[in-house]
Amino acid sequence: MHSFGAYIFDLNGTLVDDMQYHVTAWHRLLNDKLGARLTEEEVKRQMYGKNSEVMARIFGQDHFTKEEADRLSFEKEKKYQEAFLPHLKLIAGLDAFLESSYRRGIPMAIGSAAIPFNIDFVLDHLHLRHYFPVIVSADDVRHSKPDPETYLKSAAGLNIKPEACLVFEDAPKGVEAALHAGMRAVALTTMHDEGEFAAYSNVLCCIHDYTDPALAQAFL
Image (tube, rainbow, N blue to C red):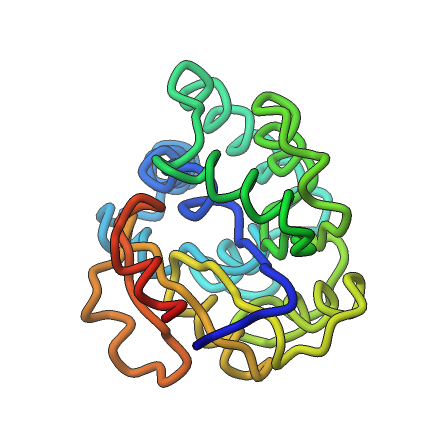
C-alpha cells in the first residue's frame, strides 16, 4: 500500500483544466505581437518553466530586457485570465479529494512555475487557500522544472521528506522534476497523452481527472 506524508500540486492543468487557454494566449502574443510564426503545437512544446524562459528559448537569451520580458509576461497572463475566468473551476473530483485529504490531516502545497498573479487568480476565485499553507511559485526558485528545486522547496516548507511526498502534475517536465526530487507522481492527462509520461519510472498512474478509478487504485 502506498502511503504519503504530503501532496504537492502543480497548478495549471492539475488544479484547473486551463492549459489550452495558456496555449492560445501565448500563441497570440508570440505570433501576432512578436512575429514568431509558431504553430500551436510548437507553442505547446516550448511552454514550460518561467515565462521569461519561454521567450528566451524562442527568441534568444538576450532578445528582451528583464523589464520587457516582465511586461510581455504580464500582458499574456492578463489575456489568459480574461479568457479563462468564465470557465474557471476545479478539475472534476478535485474538490472532494482536497477536502478528504484536508480532513485526514495530509499537508498540501502548491509547487508551480506560475507567477503569483496566476496562482492568486486560481486560489482566491475558487477559495482554496486554506488547503495550501505552502506555495512555491516561479518567483521563489532560481531553477525551473525539470530542475527539482520547486518540489524540494515545497517539501521543505511542509517539513516533510521528499520521498514521502506525492506530486500531482500534468506535464512531462514536471514529472521529471518530481523524479529528480525523489518523489512519486500522479500524471494528469489534461494536455499530454499518457504515452508522454511512459519514460518516467516515478509515475504511479495517469488520470484524466480526480474521479478516475486509477487514482484510488494507485493507493492500493
